[in-house]
Amino acid sequence: MSGHVIPSGSSAREILVARRLRAGVRHASGWLRALACMLRAVEERRILATLDDRMLADVGLNRLDAEREVARAPWDLERRN
Image (cartoon, rainbow, N blue to C red; front, side):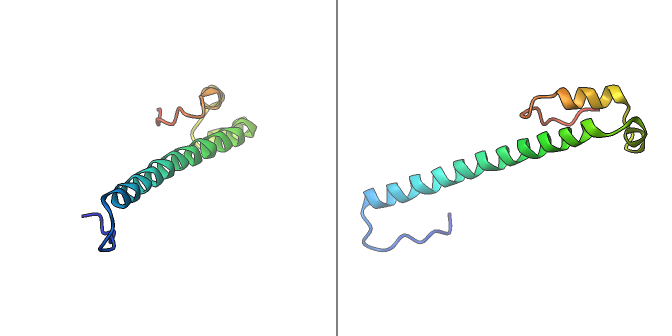
């Protein structure tokens, strides 16, 4: 049960339209969450590129690790070791 109340007297067409609208909203919100994650990764990688070797060592990275991370595509969000 979805928890949505459908008013009595609603036609089958109105019910179908309401269901499709809810499905579309869920789909769009999924895309927006994915886009937000990508934008966050881009910003974090941009910041990572500005760190000097001492700062990188403080977070357990070296220059090569940082360069590899910065070069990744925005949609490449899998955690790597």
